[in-house]
Length: 120
Image 1 (spheres, rainbow, N blue to C red):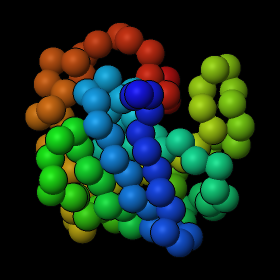
Image 2: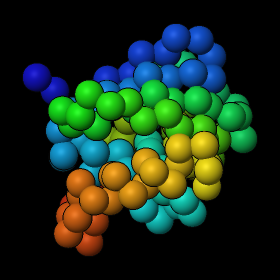
Image 3: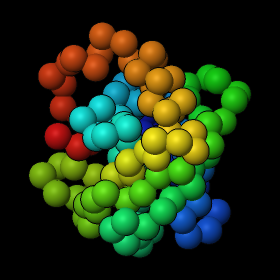
């Protein structure tokens, strides 16, 4: 099974994302973005600044995080072995703060790793 996050788009601006492995979470998480954020592999069209509502499942936790965020960058196609997708910045409210805290608790010391990610 691939460790890539599974994205299911119900309708534009709404994403359901399941990240089942810690390595995939590390590769997708963006701690350098204010309020935290995630890279989401997708070929669906999005616009810069577009508001996105996410239902995020982390690892084996049955509780889905409800997060509002916005598109802060778009990788239109595979570039330098980076997958196509969008970067989402978490809102400082509407679930974003809780998501950032939970993700950083899961990743712990791995946040300081120099391993490559989907972002930088």
